[in-house]
Image 1 (cartoon, rainbow, N blue to C red):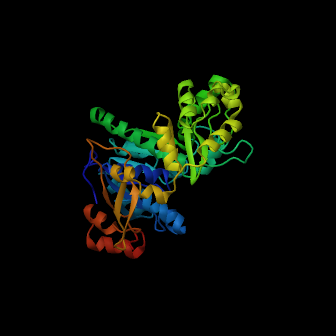
Image 2 (image 1 turned 90 degrees about the vertical axis):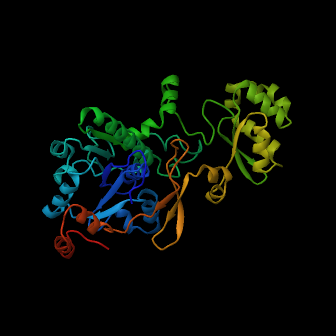
Image 3 (image 1 turned 60 degrees about the vertical axis):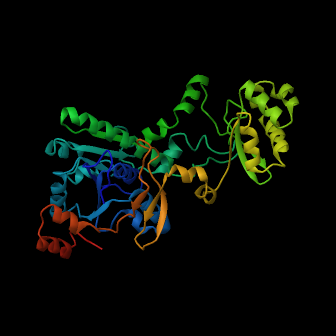
Length: 396
């Protein structure tokens, strides 16, 4: 299951569920680490919620090995400790305090295993009054500004259409883990790497926070456009769909007016400068939509790009899957599924020396590798059978 990469030889125990923890483990696996997914007898909770859960299982658990343990029992903890003796990184996204109640907190384990990097994700951090609350992506989007600034100005707050905060937290955790691995080469000691959905949510909004500190006013919902510039990330209807475009500097706006055959718009007092265009955005967007109404999305994008204006067609997943740039990038990994079929899944969003993994194995069945891993730890066939029979360890 282990692949070649810069983390070849690194072992990771992934005790995560849902997205933030498993996503971090997935990135480490894609970089070559041997990632063992530690699951309860019931398994990662995503295994029991139909297609929604299967989508998360597919996305964040490729190439991992699954070991099923009951960590509330001494036998389960004993197995985990045998694994920890040969582990570089532990990843967990338990609710704050849960790991400690199991005797698996960072302080305890890092005292026992000097080189262990203990990486944890929480919802609200471990210091504030909300530290014991469970953390979910949607709550973080709501409570830390994202929903307040997403949606139409006169509409209800909108969540982003994907798990933005969970994924950002996973990426932050991986960054910390890689820094800790580098530090360990000189110190020999592990590090407790912590992040939270709170920190991740604010981090990805740094530019919006900058707007808040510059203007003294909290950003508000304004639809697709940007509050302080126009046209900027604005959506414009075309003959067969929608495009977005940005041309808010003086030279770009003049170029936009000329290329769509409306040079007079650049002299219109309503659109004479960026503040005027922001104040008169509805009229501006109506004029742009009229000018581009006879063109397809691709024709409009090509026209705008011919004069250096940033534009893009709004496209569905079906269209993205067939996009030549996506195909050539090889960012979609081809995964061999358990039933002999295959599917694609986004892989590492970067290359190393122009290379990245292009093939992968599907997420494991619950406990699929329990016997294999226990045998590697020195357990006898009889001991493995006893564990299985007693359901301390369950394989399927």
